[in-house]
Length: 105
Image (cartoon, rainbow, N blue to C red; front, side, top):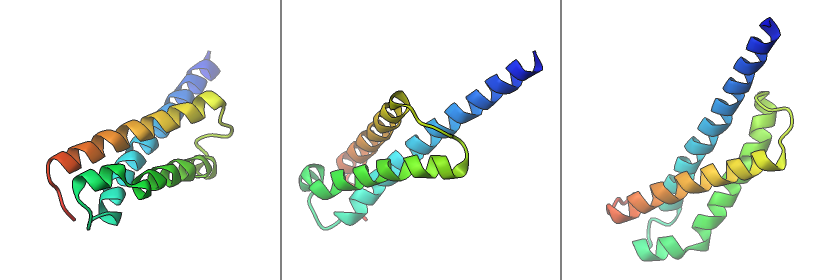
């Protein structure tokens, strides 16, 4: 019984860690895309391959970071798809908000 509670708590902490890291890095990726392309017009930033490349780098950094931190020993395909989806979602929404509000860096 005690091991079940301990296991469910560690699973919960693992899932919160993976989700939080994906969300935070998605936001950081969007801000980074705005900084890297600061000289461009908002429409050009949205179409820039540098922005998408930065998103791919942010996603690729997460997998080794999670393994090194000890939060995850092994990632399944489902876990990787979840990380990609959450990171992309936060990146897309944050970049859209920044571009439509006229934020410049």
